[in-house]
Every structure is written in structure tokens, then in C-alpha cells.
Image 1 (cartoon, rainbow, N blue to C red):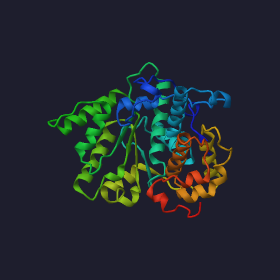
Image 2 (cartoon, rainbow, N blue to C red):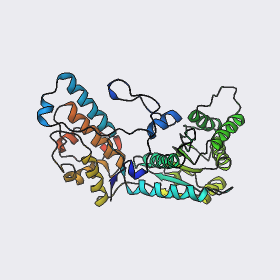
Image 3 (cartoon, rainbow, N blue to C red):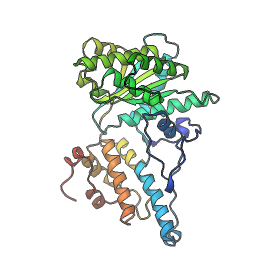
Image 4 (cartoon, helix red, strand yellow):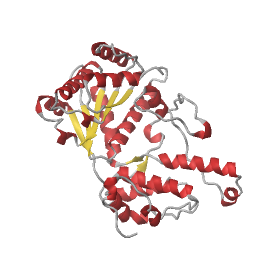
Length: 352
């Protein structure tokens, strides 16, 4: 079964946004790898815009129509997060691990999300983080300064200093060229211990190459953080097991403490149909025929190779185009005119 993730489903509480919306109702770009951006993501409580009755829509002034369309364009650019089986599994196992690690002094357990690109790893990771943060805030409403979740991405060709800097950047800790890596790590650990960190989410782990000296040192740095910070560490990356991150002495240490959640393409079946139906139900288009997309499940599967990332991009792009060109509907021909990622284009059906 596939459902849209809603606020009640994630046990959410209201958290004030850190910045007001900009002109036109669109907020500024959120960098999830900063504390301010992460908190704005957690506190985002926007509701989907409603569709106006036909007469009201036709009677809009030019300015009113611009504002109305902008709200729908913003909605379609984000659409919704769907609680796929992978997202539900990651949230369930992640919550279980936080309880398991709550009383652990050493040897805390973690989780790895591994799979091809476009299979929803980052979405599952940040939804786990959002769930943990909201639950923490429900339990500790009088501790707004707590930082229960940290989300960082591993830089390309990462070094220990670069990874430590990513933690510091999330927390807003100042770093200069003269900053000693040991001092940075001590500051990060001190802040996160005091702020009762519960979950450390590290994305793009495939950027670590354990075969290189710096890659091995980065792995050691993350292990040091996991030993110092009493939190659950969750990693996500592309085909981690094939990248050699679980081989050798360092890899064996990771494999001995972390469980694996594989991600992949969706087979053509009930969950795929449910995913398309959930996306279609979120559309805000005036002339779209009900179940038009669910009737194209075979075409959409072939077009996207069953990759959720490609499906989301295709449907979102088509919905935006439908508003921009005034057609107000998504058809097979509309979808044929939308270019998605190169990998999906290789599987594009030849006939319209």
C-alpha cells in the first residue's frame, strides 16, 4: 500500500519557520545541510492550494490569475512525499534503532541505505530525520534549543577536515583556515552532546573511497564521531556495498554494526499503481481527467524504468507545463513532450 505522508502520520508538531516567506508566497531555498534550513523544512506546514470553481477561475483578474497560478506552480514543484514501502521501512527501523541505542555506551548500531540513483534514498533519509525531530519536540516541548537531528552530505573527494567542516557548517560553528581539525571535532561533539542529538544522517556516502588514504581517514572520522556522540548514525549512498565500503578492516567494522536497507526500482504492480494514484490525487489542474495517469501505469513504468525519482520529475514537470501552457491536464502526449533524466530517456517508448 502506498500513502501520502501527512502531518499526523509523522506525529508532527508545529515548529515556527525561521524565516518569513518571500514575496509571492515562495520561501527562499532551504539548505537542509544547515540548522536553519533544516528547521524550516521541519516547520513547513503549507497546505495544498484548492481549485477554484470554474466561474470564479474565469473571472480572475490578470494579477489574481498570476498569483493563483504561482501558488499551483509552487505546489506542483514540490507535490508530495509518498510513504512507499521503503520510506516506511526506513522510518520504522530508524525509530527502533534510536531506542536500541538510547542506553548504549559503546557499540551503537546504525543503518545503511544503499541502491542505485533515483531510488528515493535521500527522501527516505530526510523523512526519517523529520520523524525523529518531530517526536523529540513533542516529548521535549520546553527544550527548543535541542538539535535532535543532523543532516549532512559527504563532499566529493572528502577528507576528514571536510567532513568535520560539514558538521560545523550545519551547526553554524565558525571555521577558519587556521582551525585545527581536532578543535573543530571537539566543538562539534560538545555541541551535539549538549543539544541531545538523537540521529546523525550522512548522505552521499559513496563519495568516500576506502581504497584511498583520505577515504580511510574519513571513515575513521565518522567512526570517531559515532563513538563520541550518543546518537544513531544512518548513512545513504549509491551502491555502497559495490563501492568497497564494506570490505577490508574498516568495512568489516561498518558491516558489523550497521543494518542494510536496499533501495531499487519499483516493479509494475500494486505499489506502483498506488504511487501513481497518490501523485495524481495531489494534482491541482482544472481539466485533468480522473485516473488519466493511473491508466498509463505501463507507459510510465517503461518511461521511468520504475525509478521513483524519475517518475516524480516527469509528473511534476508535466503538471507545471500544464499550468504554463493553459492546457490544465496531463495526457500521454504531454508526457511524451517532457524530457526527464538521461537514464530514463534511454527507456523512452518510441511511439507516442
